[in-house]
Image (tube, rainbow, N blue to C red; front, side, top):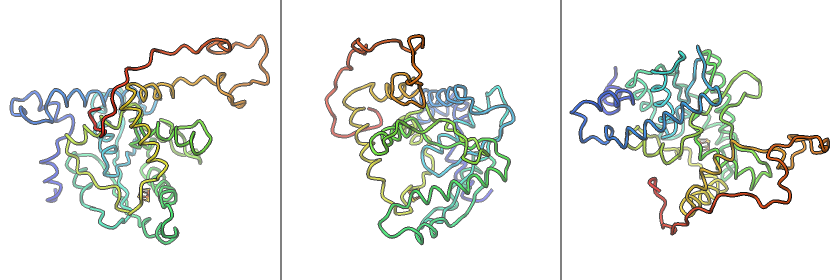
Amino acid sequence: MNAPAAAAKAALPTPDALAAEARHPAAAGDARFSNTFLRLKKKLERGVGKAIADFNMIGEGDTVLVCVSGGKDSYTLLSCLMALRERAPVNFRIVAMNLDQKQPGFPADVLPAYFESIGIEYRIVTEDTYSIVKDKIPEGKTTCSLCSRLRRGIIYRVAKEIGATRIALGHHRDDMIETLFLNMFFGGKLKAMPPKLVSDNGEHVVIRPLAYCTENDIARFARTMDFPIIPCNLCGSQENAQRKQIKNMLQGWAREFPGRIESIATAMTQVVPSHLADNSLFDFRGLTRDTLVAEGDIAFDRPELPAPSRVIPIVSEFTDED
Ligand code: SF4
């Protein structure tokens, strides 16, 4: 093992090692062994396990290619999948993958050292998509869509090379909600980010096992785990203004109306096509007196809604503990 790997091994025990060592007196005083942290770890793993079961994400014999960017979400995803693999009723293989896109200042030794330290099979793929994007997109224009298209193509290629049957991405519940509002406000579509999808060419199944996990929980977990985070702004791209606007709106709601974000997340799992207006989802034209409609006739009723949540004063700064 090289020097960075050895250093990372000393600093970064795996989640399972943490759980085991937590029972040891030497662990006392370390935040990673506190009951609060172990409860958080359990909550995240329960969320991932539920998403995997609800959407049939992983089955016997699957090879899961886990895309790790070096951000908090993908580190957490890898940790949870590794922990769950230990006690899953099915056997599956995990291969971690990082794509080094040659962004200036990308610390290429961090992820190999981390993967070595936790003993996971991994692939580091180096492709200079940064130069391609800089070359093709005029200065000042958004680079993300070309960059993501290139990245997606490379990930699909690697998945094929290693015989992966699943590609796991680190998007979480709040990414899905943001996308829902982005599409509604700026795209005129009621569409979010699915927990599971098939690639356009039908060759790959992409899964998002963090679909039920909140960004706050992930951030708290990542902080305590002290993952070697790689900054996400190395390409120099500014955060998309529309996404930022949606994020601010949702964070405002989270502060002002406790429970609203949870309700939106639940709503995404309880769609009633007969009470929207999309002819392709519900046959309004063919509707007759004999048609059975989910949720029945509420045309003349006031909608039944739970009592409004207690309104709490707006705090000046959003924190993970909110
Ligand atoms: S932020 Fe940078 S690295 Fe990420 S998708 Fe956009 S251009 Fe690519």
